[in-house]
Every structure is written in C-alpha cells, then in structure tokens.
Image (cartoon, rainbow, N blue to C red; front, side):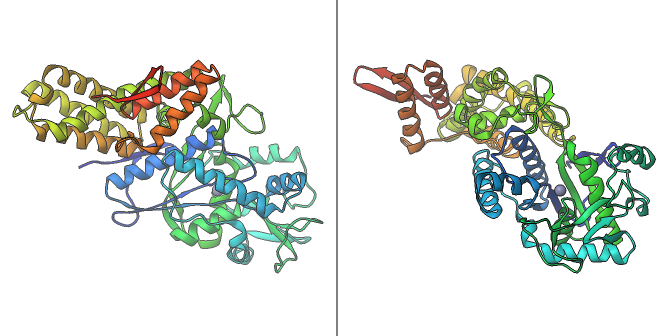
Length: 470
Ligand SMILES: [Zn+2]
C-alpha cells in the first residue's frame, strides 16, 4: 500500500525505494571521527538516518544499519598529542560520550560499529585488489588511487574531472603521479601509530575504510549509503571509485545526504568555531524538544539553530503534543462512552492520518508529518472538549495507537510516569536548586518539562508539591 520515495543524490531525483532483496534493507551511514564532543550537526545527521531506519521498519523492512568509527586519523593523533594521552584512549572516550548522547536523543543503535583499527587486514586486502586491477599504484611506501583510471569518477557529485584537475593543480604534491590521486595507504611518520603492510609500515587513508567496512557488512551491492552533504565530495566519490574498482560491482544503490546545520545562515562547523556541543544544548533543553526541533525542517535543506528557535518548540512539545497524547491515553483506558465518531469527524481524522503517512513516505517530509501531528493534537483537544469520555473506548484506543505509531516513526517519546518516577523527582530537585540560585528561566523550563510528564509543581511554604494533571 505505502510506497517510499527517496531523493537519490546519484540520479538527482526522487525515486521509489526498491530494496535489492525483498523486505531487507542494508543501510551504511558514515560515522564520526571521535576526537571531540559531538555537536548539533552530528545530532541532525544521526536523527535523520534514524528516522529513515524507522520509516523502513514501519514498512516491515528488516534493516541492517552499519555505522563506522574513524578511530585513527590526523585529528585524533594531533589532539591526543596535545593532551598527552594515547590516541586509542582519546577515541574511546569520545565514542562513549557520543553513544551516550545518541541514546538520549532516542537514536536506535546501529547493528554494528566497525572501527578502522579493527579492520586493517581487510583494508589492506582491498588496497591489494585495487593495485592488482590497475586502479592503484605504490610510491615510496604509500599507495595512491589513480583517479583517471576510474571512468565514472565525478558522477555522484556531478563534477567534471578536467575541472577537478585544474583545481587540484593549485596544490601540487610531488609524491603523487597526478594531483587528482588520493592516498589509500599513508607511509608511517615518526611517532605516529602505524601497522605493517606489504608496502611498508603506515596507516590507511581516510576514504578506504568506508568502502571496506560497508561492503564487509552488507556485501558489494547494498541498498542505502548516507551521510552529511559535505561528504558527497570527495569522500563518497572516492568510496565509489574504491569499492567499484575493487569489486567490479555497483556498490550502494541509493545515496542519501542531509543538509547542514547553520548559525546565522553560516555552516556550523568545528573548524569555524561556531558550534554547539550536545552536552551544552542538552543541559538547557530536553532531548525530545531537541529531536522535535531537528525534525522541524526537511532533512535536505539547511537547519538554522538558535536558542529562540529551540525555545519556540518547547511549549509545542511539552504542552501540545504531550498533552494531547496523554488525553488519548487516558480515555483509551477510562472512557465508558458508546458514541462513534460522526461522519465528518471520521473524515477529518482519516485525512490527518493519511497526510502524516503521505508526508513521511515522500522523501521523509518531517515538517509535513509534524504539521499533521499538530492537527491531530487540535483534533484531540476539540474532541475532548466536545465529547470527552462520551466517545467509545475503542475509538480513543484507535486514536492512541495511531498517535503512538506516528511518534514511533519520528522517534519521539512522550514521557509517562508510574507514581512519582525518579526522573520526575530529579527534575523537581533541579528546579528547587535553580530557584535557590534565582535562575527563574531554568526553573520555568523545568516546570514546563515536568508538564510534559503530566505533572504540575506547586510551590508552598513547606516546599514543592506535585499534582498530576488530567
Ligand atoms: Zn564514510
């Protein structure tokens, strides 16, 4: 019944998703280089691919999601040297931190997280195959990919190889035969981690790992490859050249890329210094508010991040969405009415649900999906006001189930409580501390978050008192 369309960077068009094997989908997403705390740009990328996975799962695909860690790289080596810690320890620390924040954002963990340092023999095998098939050459202890040998180079990023050559000439590197060529294996430098190889000690270049680890896990032909737009060139272009050169197969069928996060319309990046870490952002707002905010714009466009924009989402999530969800939950358990929905209300409800699914299955249009979710909230508030428990429990139960299904696809979780949950007590304590510090803004934010759990906090002379709403 439902068909999923996705914009494929490779064709430059929206295509109907057809998996290579029935009801199975292989998904490879480029992972992080763990040398610092994860920032909002990471959160956006991985929330987008989490929604893609949830959408596939809602269509009953069995998804295999693979995401790498580039656990050895110049940035890791430099930072580790500065901090006087081993590179492996630095990478481990930031991998743990990354996973903690991904978990808070309700991003499903990948089925496997292969690491470069655990795949050195496999990487060397692919390099060897590229040399044998005439796509790579050895030069002074390093190995390079001969870009001109791969006829389709530039197809993904729609670049012309002669124009690329012009650009590359600016920084002529004498160690390569052609300025376009890129390193598959880098000769070891003094004091840096290295591995023995048929070409002498060294370490892999950046791009080779993803060709190796994706095809290892998903086969030489697989369904979807994803990452941020900034990876289209050269990273993904190089991945294609390597994988197709070594295996002779097609590699990924669909290439999906998410847009940048911007600050004042400028790309947010570590190198520009205008970035916010998830640690900072999630100290100020709840993960679900953040996740809702990240989904508020279509994944292919830019997403401007500001405190005001985030703030604007807070009451929508905490009061509107969570409030309506709880009304539906409550009546699904408690309604004693007998009334069905009128023909008009039934038509209105069906249209809202259809709009949600059409939106999300059309290139993951989350703004449309969130719009429908908000319409559903209005519908619930109105139904509650007019009919409330007069409507039969079956109808409320259907509304609750469909509401939950929509939230599940978007990865949004309405908090629930069982008596006084430890999480709620923790928030009450934090709010008390904020009040003592006269931080009224924070105290108010926490009050709002408590409302999302269906709890109102009232201040009295003997301390805060909690009251369940509904
Ligand atoms: Zn990659």
